[in-house]
Image 1 (cartoon, rainbow, N blue to C red):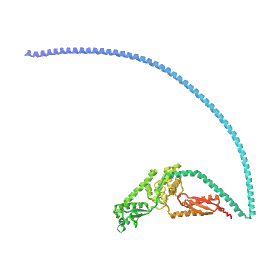
Image 2: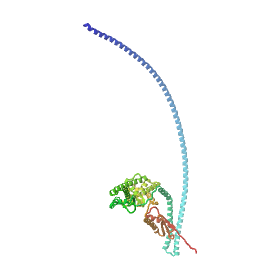
Image 3: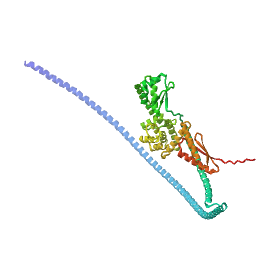
Image 4: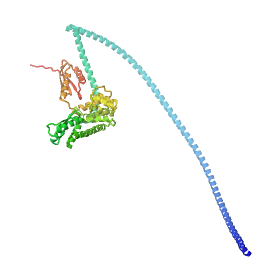
Length: 543
């Protein structure tokens, strides 16, 4: 049993010895291989080191060559810069010498000019000395003439006294009568001189102003055009048949009463076939009534409730049209900013007429004319257009508010913050207050052009005859006037004078006096020409 146990142990020991031997052999082979690899690596590193050393030597050689080249280039650049600096110094020296030469030449020229000026001054001093001597001589001559004139005036006074004395002796006149004759002679002389001054001043003013003013007015008038309209206070509505009149009247006239109460317009139904008439002085109410009546006739249902509904719709439509009309006027004239309430008031002028002329169309026309004339004169065109458009704004509500349209227009313009120039143009366009700007003068001129053109306005026969009578009465009121005739629809007055009482020179003064009185006492559109005619006839009959 002991022997059996020893055998495995022996086997194990042998196995260990064999494994150790094999491991040693394997390790030895590995070490040898590593040593071989190390020798190879060392050899490879040595070869690389030699290669790098050769490359470094080559680079050092190249660096030496580069350094040599750089030194050579630096030396060359240094020499080039030295040469360039020498060239610049030479050029600067030449430029300086040229500048000095030019300055020397300029100084010599200045010296020459100064010498010339000194010579000229000396010549002027000589001329002044001569003129001083001449002035002294002229002064002496004037003093001599003044003395001669004084002497002649004294002689004239003596002659005048002798003439007066002879008049007393020959005519046996009293001193007062002779004085009247002399004063009459002096009055005639003064009238002659006064008339000559008036003619000369008028000719000079017309020579300077007529052509320019005429050109401005012609350009302004040609740039605008307006329709001719007729004034009316009634509107006519056509009916489809005669039976519609009964439906409009209603039971016991209730429809008529309701319609008139809601619109403020008189509804007239007479024997005229197939029409009814709407009468009223307020054009806006009349327009509302007309639209409401047309709607009622088209609908066919006519009773108080339906009338009220149609009147409300028509009123809304007219109010919209009024605002659109105001905006349209602003757009047409190029005005961009205006208070909305003032635009509404402006639009109401669409339904307002003055002597048959539509006031909105008239206001637009005046705005265009004023703007055109202001542009020609170099004034503020936009402000002039605005003043011309708003000059009659008060007429939009003068049926509802007491006061003249001028006063109402001024209040409206101030209320909605219009400029002082526009307010003054409104206030002064009928001469109620002084004109504070040239734009106000242009508004007056444009208003006259627009209202005085042919067909612009209608006028009652009574007012027309009254104006002609007043015109002839003013002219006939002057002493020496034999007859006066208003012609060309009152645009000219011809005055016939007695030749024995009015001289030729006096006719000029008489024409101006009549003109001034007409401007002061009368109101009229456009201009009135005053023509004074003096004619003397001598008749002899041979037998």
